[in-house]
Image 1 (cartoon, rainbow, N blue to C red):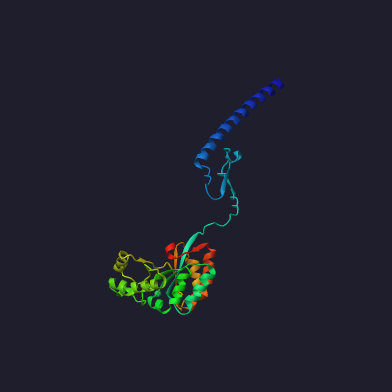
Image 2 (cartoon, rainbow, N blue to C red):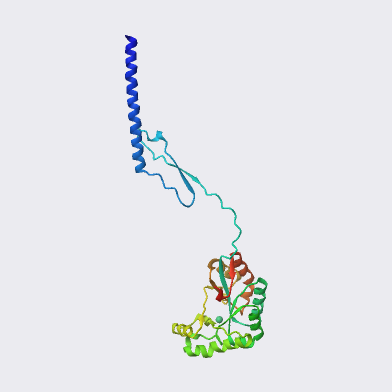
Length: 278
Ligand SMILES: [Zn+2]
């Protein structure tokens, strides 16, 4: 009798336990689904570090606990370091060094020496009066393979001129002087001081002239702010693909800084071209 009662009790408790476990398992599953809907796992990122989502452990979602944490644990796995690649075969960008106001008796030749030593091509915006005064230097600019462009005959403020006079008095005499010495008639011009009325811009374009200003002023012309450090700092902070860099032929600041300026741009993988090569 005692044994029988014990046996019945054992069966009774077993049934109770099985029912309880079944209910718990079902309830737990339901609860987890609810939680997953409310807190969907984070998306795996397509870029950047790979995020692996650790599935929440069952224990954390068993019902009956007062505080239930979301339970997602993120593991960050940094992307593999890329294999070192050889430097690009083609430079990343192009820049044009431009030198205004030459030729002169002293600094233009020094600039040409530096460009020759560095194997750099540049553009010279020349002044007609100086072309006639320093023809040998003008010829060397041409023979060294640089582009010659027009910077007026007298370095006048062309905003004060009638359109016809800009060409007749300032541009044509300069380009003719260049042509006499080199056989090449420049049709690219840069107005002195960058000064040109809008109607003159249209007029010159209609007459076949290409107007080139600049995008990076080194201020080599300004004795108040043309130390090598200041000029090189401008190059380092303002360099960009397609930059037209303004410099001048007639002062010591330019020749002092030019080798370092070229080195900085070359280290940045820029190719040096004439303004027509941009
Ligand atoms: Zn000038």
